[in-house]
Amino acid sequence: MQKYRSDFPILNRIINGKLLVYFDNAATSQMPLFVFEKMKEFEFNRRANVHRGVHTLSEEASVMYEQARKTVSDFILANDPSEIVFVRNATEAINLAAYAWGRKNINKNDIILTSEVEHHSNLIPWQILAKEKECTLTFIPVNEEGKLDFQKIHPDWSKVKLVAIGHAFNVLGTINDITKIVKNIKKECKKSGSKSPRFLVDGAQSVPHIPVNVKKFGIDFFAFSGHKMCGPMGIGVLWVNRNIFGEMSEFLTGGGMIDRVSLLESGFAKPPERFEAGTPNVTGAVGLAAACEYLTGIGMENIRKHEVELTSYALRKLRGLKNVTIYGPAKAEDRTGLISFNINGIHPHDAASILDSEGIAVRSGQHCVMPWHVNNKINATIRASFYLYNTADEVDRLISGLEKSVKMLI
Ligand SMILES: Cc1ncc(COP(=O)(O)O)c(C=O)c1O
Image 1 (cartoon, rainbow, N blue to C red):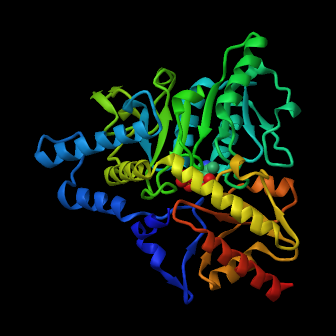
Image 2 (image 1 turned 90 degrees about the vertical axis):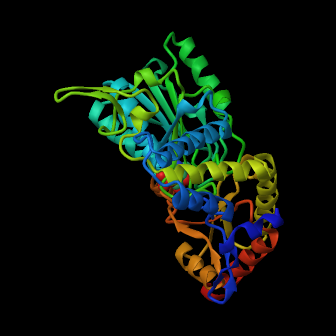
């Protein structure tokens, strides 16, 4: 993997006199030149609005936008490109599902099943919907190891209308076996004589790191962001199983999502355009497609293998430090390449500041998962998150930086 480092100019940056170690990939990953060049080519040679003009540039831009949809569709093995709705990010994707599907299909006393360790983006849209519809949110707990524990919940399955869970948790790293979870829930529902609920999976932390096949999951919605997978900021995807579009009503409305308009009423374009009102982020879509091409070129299996090795090494090294608590699954194979931890007696922000003085970027805080931190009486955590370009030498620098923090602060 070392050879790919030169694709990322930012990795040459000197921060506080030291070569950058970038371990904040779960928040936002870095962009390779390949992706930037594809976006530059679009901006400098083909920039025009899509689907609205007959002139050459508009036609070229439209072709590139639709090609981007196809590339992204292939990357997650969707049934067909029309299942890819371009949005700004995973947060907007989940909100789109909540507003366009949830508002129409969730009713009073229904249950939305989610977990107690979701990113706020996969919690707050459901809280708001639950308030509006007077329905119930039921939370699947996680066990000591950060794995979902279905034994502890006994919902009335006939009332469960939506299951909204993360494919990989951004604070614990846990990878959930979505295919198995969906199968088991469908079985429970069948036993109780009720229809299967709909499933939304938050893939923000999985798509960048592990091969994903949305068709295999048996789900209905899948959300992710471009900026965590070598792509640009401001572009994300809601994948919608094509059989579900008919259950959705319009969300954002206006230009680009209609096929006929009179002063008093309108007819709407077919999906996915129906859910992409206004001028889309064409450069972003081109960049996201380039990121998919880039990752495919390296091979998602190779990226996964590298991250498992690096995470396993980092777990071993971290466990060698005194007074360290590591959260999430014990085995690297059960998690993505991120580790949240604490060192007794050191505030995560202090450790992160000392690491920054060593040129090492980690995240400290609650990582948009406040309920899990509060419920477990954890003030904050330090999170180191890896990607394809990170190395064992960089992990060694993290460990040295943490040793320095211990010397300075305890
Ligand atoms: C699991 C998870 N879901 C959703 C999001 C939200 O992503 P975005 O800010 O790109 O919308 C994040 C971002 O950290 C995340 O980790």
